[in-house]
Image (cartoon, rainbow over all chains, first blue to last red; front, top):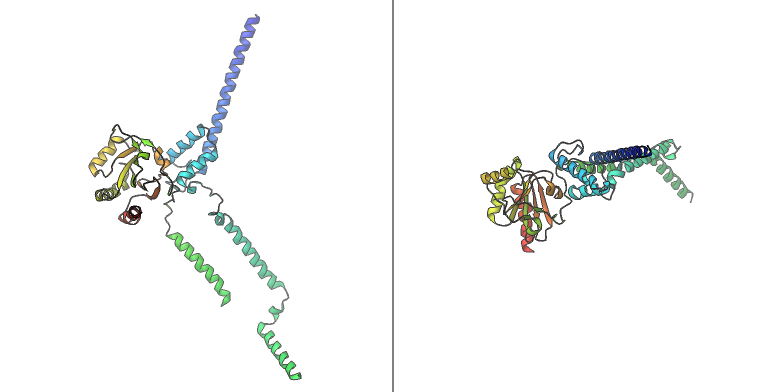
Length: 157
Length: 175
């Protein structure tokens, strides 16, 4: 009796473990396919340049997808795989251009223009709002007044 | 006058910038492999000889590596130019049969002429990935140290052969 229970226990434990192991395998496989689709979505197809590798069915895209899959299965990291592609096809293969000396204007240029515009507009508004002498009297008027006064001064001497 | 000068300068600058952009070809991607060593590979030889197509063994004198396939229409366009260049005996031309059926490649070369010293077979296109190939035909100019000097994506033209390839071969010879 005891033996049977023991046996049953072992068998169920064994079944549970294999099941759990299979689950673990499944989770691993899911994680891998997530990584593969994530990577292939970030990489550009070089033949049809406005599609990602994931979307493209071009022969080269299929080869590169296979390469990504192999490398993921070999346990390479995402960074290694991206570097591998960049070393062969250049930064163009990345959909999101990296921030470096060559691309800094691309990344920050629009913000610089925005800041410049804001400053310009602020200046213009400030100019228009201030009860500035320059706005009420022209430079010419002021010059004329100055000359008149100076002439008067000389006359007094 | 001064008031309009700055916008005018900005306009000229922007117009020049955009005009330059109009004449750039978005299809050609600058290769990161230029100035780098040729990646190594040991590929099967097209003629099934006992010797293999070992890329590192090609290094020693400048050569051209032409990536082609029998299914590739632009390859047929550039083929007479390659044959011409081979006949001039200024540089060795090697072929890389890209994702092609071996017998098709052999038949294609028999029909159209074979300008290659030898042809390696890259049936899966793996070595082509190492070379950053994305549009056949592609042609690489490699110097005697195995460094890639120039890469042509798409069919060669007479101008490219004269201005890019022959020019560089002359430079190499005069060094």
